[in-house]
Amino acid sequence: MFDFLTFLPRAVVQGIPLLLGSTGETLTEKSGNLNLGIPGIMYVGAISGVIGSFFYERANPDGLAALPAVLIPIGCCLLGSLLMGLLYCFLTVSLRANQNVTGLAITTFGVGFGNFFGGSLMKLSGSELPSIILTATSNCFRRSLPFADKLGAVGKLFLSYGFLAYIAVVIALVCAYVLKRTRTGLQLRAVGESPNTADAAGINVGRYKYVATCAGSMIAGLGGLYYVMDYASGMWSNNAFGDRGWLAIALVIFTVWRPNIGVLASFLFGGLYILHMYIPSGMNLAVKELYKMAPYVITIVVLVLTSIRNKRENQPPASLGLPYFREER
Image 1 (spheres, rainbow, N blue to C red):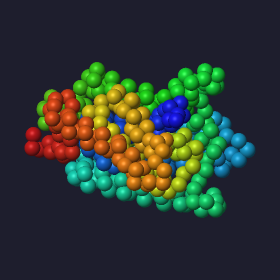
Image 2: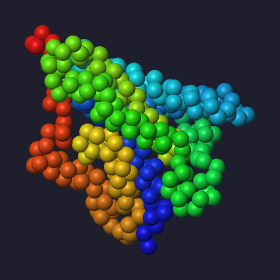
Image 3: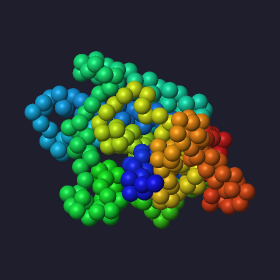
Image 4: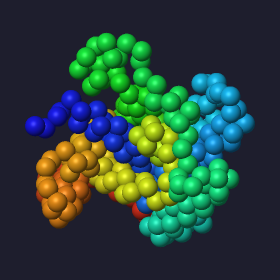
C-alpha cells in the first residue's frame, strides 16, 4: 500500500530547496535577468554554510550553542551566495555579457568551487569516507516543535519540519506580495518588462537589477544550505546535489513566475522527484527513470498550455535575458 503519511512529509522536505531556488530565480527574472547560474549558486551557498559550521564544530568539540550553530552557517551561506550574485550582475549588468553563457559559467564554477572546498574539508577531517558529517549542526536545523509528535498525523504533516522550511514558505509569500502589491514590486516588474520605459520614468534600472539578482541569489543559496543541513542530515558529499538547481528553474516556468503558487508547486515537484522510491517497479530501472522524468514533462506541458492560451500575465518578462543599453534609449 502507498503510505501517504510517510510520503507527504518527505515530499515537502524534498520540495523546500526547490521552493527557495525558484523563489530566488523568480525575483531575479522579474528584473529581466535570466540567471541560469542558480544551480551553481545553490551549490556555493551549501558549501559556504558547511565551511562555517565545520570550523565552528571543530572549535567547540564539547558541544554547540544552538544560536551560533544556526547563525554561522546561514551567514556564511548568504555571504557566499551574495558574492556569486554580485559576480553575475557585474558580468551581465555592468559589462553586458551574454546572460545565458554567464549563467552556465556560474553553474560550472559553483560546482567546481563546492567540490574543491568539499574535498579539502574531507582531508582536514581525516574521514575515511568521501563525505563530511555535521550531525550537531544538523540537529539544530532539524529541530521541530516539541509538541509535534503528540498531535499524530496533523503534527507529522504540518509541524514536524525544521525552521528553514517555514521561513522558505514565508519568503515565497512575502516576495509574491511585494511583486504584486507594492510600489517597489511594480517598479521591478517595469524594469523586467521594458527597461527603456522604466529608465525614462526615473527608475534606476541597474540598481533594481543588482538588488533583485543578489537578493534572489541569497534566497536560492538558502535552498542549498537546507538540502545539506536538513534533508541530508548534515552530510556533504561532492556532486550529491543532483539536478535540483535545474528543477528550481523549471519550477519558475511551471508557476508562471508567481512565488505564491510555487509553495504548493514545489511540494508537487518534490513528490514527483521521489515518487519512484514509493511506487513498486521491481528491478526495472527504466521504469524508475520514467518516474524521474515526471517534473520535466509536466513543466513542458505547462509551457505549451501557457503559450497556447497566450495570456500576458502568464508570460515571462518581455526583456528577460536581454542586456540593457542605456545609450540606445
